[in-house]
Amino acid sequence: MTGAAALRLAVVGPTHPLKGGVAAHTTTLAHELAAAGHDVTLVSWTHLYPRLLYPGEQAVPGGAPDVEPFPRTVRALSWARPDTWLRVGRRLRDFDAVVVVHVVPAVVPAHLALLAAAGVRGSGTGHRPRALVVAHNVLPHEQRPGDAALVAALLRRSDGVLVHTHDQAEVARGLGAERVSVAALPPHLPGGAPVQRHAHTGAPRLLALGIVRDYKGVDLLLEALAEVPGPTLTVAGEMWGSAGERVRALAADPRLRRRVEVREGYVPADELAPLLARHDVLALTYRSATASQNALLGQRHGLVVLASEVGSFGDDVRDEVDGLLVPPGDKAALVKALERLAEPGCLERLRAGVGEPDLSGPWARYVGAIEALASPHAAASAAASTPGSRYRRPGIWSAITSNGGRLRDLGRDLSRRGGASRGRHVALSATDLPEWVRPSDLLAREDDAEEARSLARRLGLPREADPLAAWAALGALAAVLRLRDDGRRRAVVVDGSGSSSPFGRWADALGFTTLETGEPSDLESDAELEPGSVDVLTRLHPGGCDADDVADAMAQASWALRPGGLLSLTVPVGPTGADGALGPAEVRGVLARSDDLGFVLVGDLDHDLTGRLRAASAGATVPDAAYGILRLTLRRR
Image 1 (cartoon, one colour):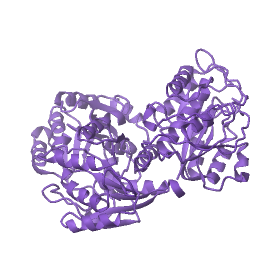
Image 2: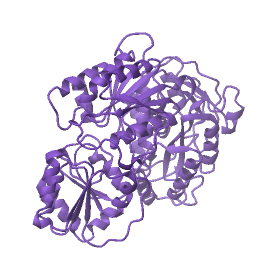
Image 3: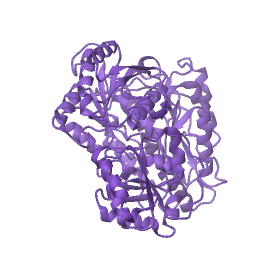
Image 4: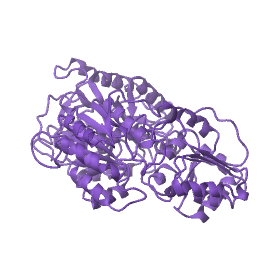
């Protein structure tokens, strides 16, 4: 992202040498925003929490960072020096937005002072930074008197709040936040790549990782473990207060002798992967939670996850597929889960279901949410735009045929819909689109296409007769709104999808500047375009790609797209021998080549989508015809 769409952002939050998940998230957030083309400064602390709030060591032991440090980092804030709050705030007055990372209410006075010094008023006219709050916990797990009042003051002062679950969104709104967005906590995994795991055929080896606090339920896990012979447990982390004392006492139970190891202290990043490799199950038996990346951490290292169904764990863990879910605070359910893990063959079956988590798609959505909140016009209705030059090329796909309620003959519609949306503008934002409309997705049933076309009509988009074309265009439009829209419809969209695709008309109706190109090779000769000037490039059904076109489309995207820009394309998927189609294995090859070219997939091809590709393949009835349409949205680094 360059030029008018780029933002000058200050991210205010903990980073190295401060330790913990929030510091890793803040650092990775700065990296991701910069990779999307923004001018980012990370403003951090030399000293943050008072000892009363954080009794453990604040700095990483030994000095090794959990994640790669962000190069443009200013450590100018100190909890004990209110003058630094004001001095830093005054230096941020020329920024477009100040992104405050909120964790505990005790730091709110510092944040409020900084925002006031930066000129943030929460309303008004003229240039001022927008105040955004990224809230890991709107209210703390263990609340104190006055916490709600402090957090409410911060949220009312902000222009936008980003939280990680819908439950947290309700808490934020209840405290007075007017504009709240929800985006899943993206992975910021410490410890690097997994190391080799050695074969283990004995009892399940469980690991409870991180600071021991009451809400994490490690004591309940120990109580349950005492009733189930066999499984072992390592508790690795700092022991805080009474919760730590209780864990030490329970670990001394004679029934747990030689089955529980308490490893006190912070686990440095370079020791994390070997520690995970020595265990089979990551135990996350929390009494309460908001959002956590720990389930993803375990899955990346090949561990089965035993988790309470709180916070984001229910979304990350598939019960009886790659882990087990239990109700929070339920000792009896934990006993049954441990007995289940100890059953012959159970652990092996669950381990086989553990897949590599998607590490890029969640960040693309997360950055898009912050971009939308940071725009001063993000809440405004779409403005009119002046469409650019237009030349549609014919669709290139052959018919895709199927039977038995699956995709019917697609055919072709080469008629020109000359300016069907001229003068018509639709007020539509990312929040109007349900989550099932995904930038990357597989269409294998006609009913799903009909549902997409019906949704487009309900949203007020220009009518489209072809449900498959509507499905293809709607997902690409969702990607634009979620990831590239700054609220002023300034994204430059180049549509190479052909006259039968509704995408260009729909983008016009929303107010985007949409250029329609001929053959992809025409991009470099288009006088209106310069290298790296395009925000979105599409090649969608029925003018999408076949197997031979994909590499050309990515090459053109490399020339045309600015950093953070999107390429959305559709390609038929089918068995070996189906003309122009990709097989499931070839899809992996496409993603590997795209990574080499500097693109990351927006979405998850490791879990749900891969399973659906296999199911579609198994259900195909015509041996030499495609059985579905794959929509891929790739984001340029």
